[in-house]
Image (cartoon, rainbow over all chains, first blue to last red; front, side, top):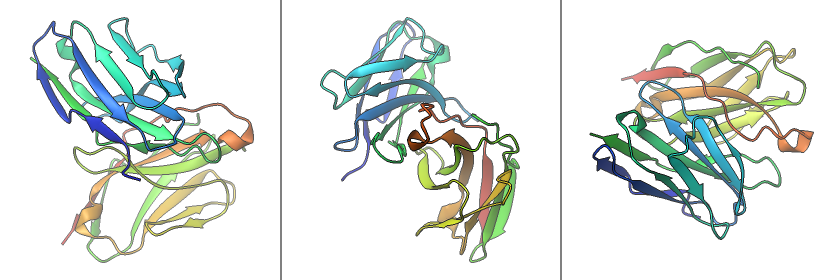
Amino acid sequence: DTGVSQDPRHKITKRGQNVTFRCDPISEHNRLYWYRQTLGQGPEFLTYFQNEAQLEKSRLLSDRFSAERPKGSFSTLEIQRTEQGDSAMYLCASSLYRDTDTQYFGPGTRLTVL
Amino acid sequence: DAKTTQPPSMDCAEGRAANLPCNHSTISGNEYVYWYRQIHSQGPQYIIHGLKNNETNEMASLIITEDRKSSTLILPHATLRDTAVYYCIVRVERGSGGSNYKLTFGKGTLLTVNP
């Protein structure tokens, strides 16, 4: 068990560009979550999947954001036409929705939009 | 989810016990208390959780008051590597029939362990 991994760890982009982040959950975890964290704040929920189904999206997830988990394993989060306000740490977590459903987080992807 | 209240910051001497308080006076009977911590520029790390009994694992102990309106996370022998923001979160547990999957983080307590 290598834990939740995220790629890339850092991304710098220019305003208006599209970016995509990847999350690999802990093996056999069937739930996967995306959170966003801005400076000085705690993480905020964006969306979650159970297997390949996206079951909930926060109002924070504007139409420029899209997340997928095509085979119920890894997930991608894409941001189109990035804005400076999108600069944040994007965190992925996974859990096994069987017993305690405890979420385990990855190291995050830090996005800077210039 | 019930709202939690934590002090914004605390200091602790290295080698001493760190006791981090959390108030959750509106907690419901089927809500668990979770603790996570976040070391600078890393993802949150799960520490421990409990319902009403005290819990202990290799990282920490969780003491929940009898009325469940507050709890204390105890790091028995704090080290410099325990310097982090500690988050107290209450959440409905899957087994209780709830479906509140997401974690709602506040601003947490910045614990600084001093040499």
